Length: 129
Image: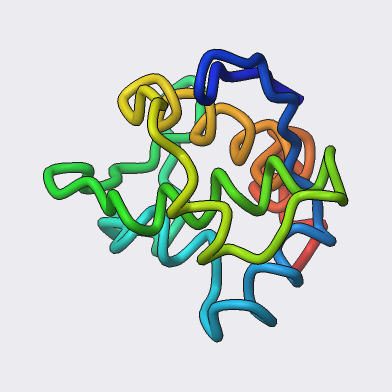
């Protein structure tokens, strides 16, 4: 969970698996793929590990998907605050939000929710093959 000032009010936001489904139902695409774009593959595919077993993933953030960020921010806010209306009405009513801050907060929330380390370590050890 995270909070972000939107129009001068601290808004609680959260992403979970239900948020990902809500995003896909609303926008017809995958939230994680839309937000992160292309992941550069290493020698072993999507997951690459250094010599100490630490996971390395190279993601191209050279072009920030700003409109996707607004959609993800809406889903995250609506997950914590179900009374938030439809996307178009909400987005057209927002007059003040720091999208650079939102980008960092959303990326951290996605990491915490969807990309925890424990399953990756198990996959590395071959337990999910």
